[in-house]
Image 1: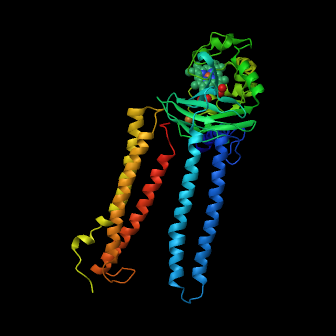
Image 2: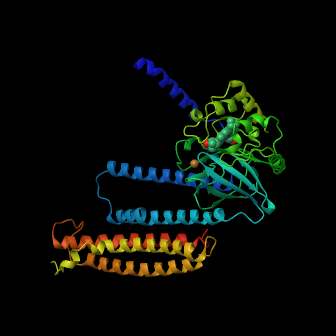
Image 3: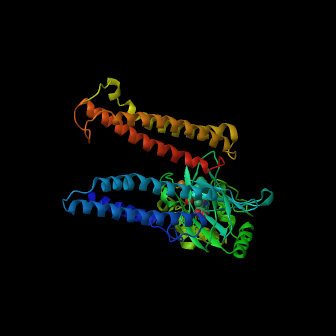
Length: 326
Length: 126
Ligand SMILES: [Cu+2]
């Protein structure tokens, strides 16, 4: 009995291991800053770490000295000076300096991006990100799970949540900001280096919280404009019949087809993304096939039904169609 | 010799008074800013009025803490019970409580200044 049930257990474990294996979606360290705010945070971090290390060494040194010094009496005056100077004045001055320095960074980082800057609305969902580029005259271009930004320009993010509290964090670019249902928070980012960076949800939001990543691509203005123009186009890949027939359109929109659901991510250009499922698997044909057949294994608790019951040729056809949506 | 020490002087109240003012100052500053932004000025509103209010709280808090600290220091100087004032006797207790009250007043004054500093850097409810 026990040996029989051991095998499915192992299988489940293996599947979970697969589900939690993280795709290399880009750089994601606060210590390799590629944005203005992250740069300040990293500077603060190094100053504090090195400063604290020096102070720690001095304190430990003093303690060792106190233990090992000869027993001859120390001058009361010198001792008082050490206590008042090292115990009261020094920490007060250091803390006041650090406080003023870090506070003085904040207003600049919190200020809204100048009028006319790029504005993007990012909405947190369990467990993915809706991304809307807000153009002039209310025209929006909707995408999901991927954010492209022009390098060297401030961008104003409007952050919202559809369900529970999420938190938007691209460690290499800036600080984190909560996404709160019923409210709009804002975050200003200013990427300084071209590259691909990983964003994460930084507030526990349910079963697959750890599988809620965001790919942030920072590129030159021209490349970014080309990309956005392409994303604004309706879908071109043929073969939506099967997609519509399976009812995927109830939850997903593919611009240019009859699919106009709003529960799940926009799939108009899903084939152009670095991953599907907010970072769980590659957006190529095998990856998409896995996603459709084993949705809940790849992403426990996922709010999309698995389509593992479809005959394999149909799965492949769907995956090919989606991968073609570039 | 130990002078007459009124019983009330051994109360712990004199030591917690200054930290209590620090707590009240912090809470009041926070509440003022929150209510101002939520009910009066709006999410993009100006914080200048709050900055003024917090400056006023700060002046009042520092004056009160200064007074408490001054009186605590006076208590510490009363009598000739020797340091470190840990004898189980009214004289030692008295000087100890005075000293603790004075040190806590210093700490509280600093903390009040630090929390007030934060308000100087933000001019808007954002
Ligand atoms: Cu989340």
